[in-house]
Length: 112
Image (cartoon, rainbow, N blue to C red; front, side, top):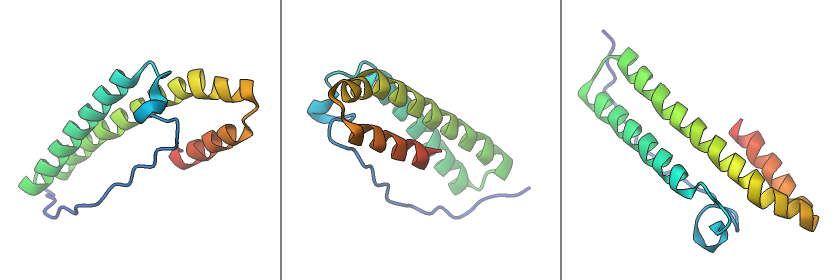
């Protein structure tokens, strides 16, 4: 049986462009509650992973739990992307804002 014993803590930097989720710029976003719920679920799964590692649980169990974290993150990204396209990108196209489209392309490249 393989067990993990070391946990490395790291800082997570969240980059939020102006007009994105959070703050006054989210007035047009319709899925904010769903995004927050998904983030909470992902955080719960990740806390479970941390506890499993601290307990020295079997690696296969940890990997299965990590797959749940990944699924929540991907699901959250899909909701954010759809919401962004339905609101921010539609507005950007109407206003001829090429920078918003370039920013979306960069974000997609980084996520994938």
